[in-house]
Structure formats: C-alpha cells, structure tokens
Image (cartoon, rainbow, N blue to C red):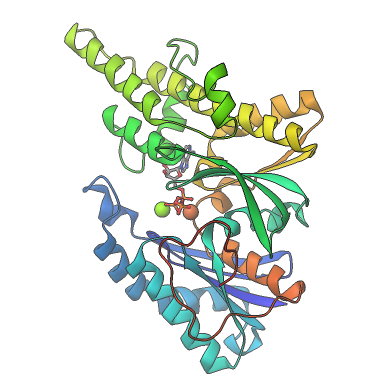
Length: 344
Ligand code: ATP
Ligand code: MG
Ligand code: FE
C-alpha cells in the first residue's frame, strides 16, 4: 500500500510516503531553531510552526515522491503522545486529507512508530523482539510480538528520559539545545573512563525491583556536582572528558538492560529506536556486546531515529498490510497516549 504519514508530536513537521516497506520520501521541517534560545521546546511556538509548515511539506513530499495525493491508499498520523496543540495540527490535517480523498485514516502511537520505522531500512520487523525506545520523553524496554496490535512494557525510566539527560547535561556543559548530538560529537575527543559516573538502578538491591527500569536523574546530578567542584577549584572543566564519561554511563546501562531483557525472554533480536538511538557510542556498544552473546541488534540510520513522518507512514503501512481496522474520522489527539495503545 501507498501510505502518507504525518508527524507533529513535538517540533518536527514530518511528512513521509512509503510503499509497503519501501521509503519513497521523508520530508521534515523543524522549528528547533526557534526554540533554541529558550533551551527547550515552547509548545505555542511549535503549534504555529506546524500550521505554517504543514501544507508546503505535504506538497514537497508528493512532488519528490512523484505521486499525486489521489494515488495514496491510506493516511497515517501520530495521535499521541506529545504536545497537545502540536498533535492537533497533524491530526486535523490528516482528517482533512482522508476525508477529502475518501481514504482510511490510522491514528497511531508515536512511540510504536519509532520502532516500526526500522522496517524501511532493514526489512520486516523481527517479531518477537525486544524494543528499546530511547527518546526525548521516554526510555522504555518493550516486548513486541505484533507491533500493529500492542507492546508489552517490561520497564521504563522512573525519572528522566535518556534524551532529557543528554539535553540537561549538555546545557550544564554550555552546549546548545538540543544537546544530544553535541554531546555525541564532543565525546569523540574525550576519555570515556576519565570519570566514573554512577550507573543508575544497576546495584543488586535495585535490580530486585527495577531490573528493566532506568534512572538518569542521579547521573545528571552527579555530573552537575562534579562540574561545580571543578569550577570552585578554579580548574578548567574538561568538557570532552565529562561528555564522554557521561555518555558512557548512559549507554552502559541502556545496553546492559536491553541485553538482559532479551536473555530473560529468550529473544534473539533487539531493536533500538527514538532520537537517542542516533547516538554513535550507543550504536557501537550495543552491536559489540550483542555480538558476543549471539544477539542481533537493529538500529535505523540516525535520520530515521529522530522524529519524522516516514516512521508514521511505516506503521500505517503495516496496519494496512495486516488488515487492521482504520480509526474513526473523529479520532482524538491524546497527548498522554500510553505506549500500549498502538492504534486509536
Ligand atoms: P518522544 O519520542 O519521547 O516523544 P521526542 O520525539 O521529543 O520525544 P526524539 O525526537 O525521538 O524525541 O528524540 C529527541 C532526543 O534525542 C533529544 O533529547 C536529543 O538530544 C536526542 N538525540 C538526538 N540525537 C542524539 C545523539 N546523537 N546522541 C544522543 N542523543 C541524541
Ligand atoms: Mg525534535
Ligand atoms: Fe520521538
């Protein structure tokens, strides 16, 4: 099926077009620069930017894919979770398109779409698999048996999301927003064992209750204390070493727990998705440690990890292919949609 996907849950206006597992086009217009001076995404600014970018982005996507809107078999849209006003722009646009074209609409979960996108690069999803979703707002381990039906949560962060930790640590190191990519680049020239930062929820007593959960706020505080102590002593802060050591701590915990989840379920495939999956150290570490255990790891290329419309189209195409009932035309946008609701 030829499916057009619309993504507006945060600050990216994404329109993607796929044919089955084949990506035709992925157009993203971001308002990130308008938010940078505030150090975080401003919801009102994001909503307005989506409104302005929506029609031109759809037009550009169709033109680049060499299709007319009439060729589309279905429209897919992020129904949640995300910023309420931002989601509404995407959902309203998708409804208008579906109604105007007389085509079905699928309101899908943004987090499940972060997982499904991998099929555009590596082919059919390995099911069952363990999906590790690491993004700006979430850090979860999920067991996925059929991505169009639901996911079983195994664990999640009990405080900050992984991406949030990257962004907060970047900020205290004086790096621009969003900080994840900057930490990644800065860490390349740093020493990852220079500072021994804490690995949250990995102590024996924590594992009893939180085997597959994450905690990154203690790590963030540890980095802040370390940097403050340095500044007080008048010595320069070795930014690259701090970035590399922090990144190592995050990736170490993520990879350890993902591998543990796979082994505990007897599953041999791990899929990593979400913006933090773009991290070069996470990708390398996951691949190396999984290979030692005979576990396969799939991570989409960085451009497909961060928010985009292709991921929504990919999940929509899977809904069509597996014969799922489309959403009603009055489907709601749900800013706090749980990860377990894949289709509304
Ligand atoms: P969610 O998907 O939970 O709703 P979101 O959509 O805002 O949140 P994504 O776009 O999936 O989040 O991911 C953005 C996050 O990914 C940001 O926190 C950003 O810093 C982080 N990120 C992007 N690239 C990298 C990288 N190379 N290394 C580490 N973090 C990264
Ligand atoms: Mg973004
Ligand atoms: Fe996202």
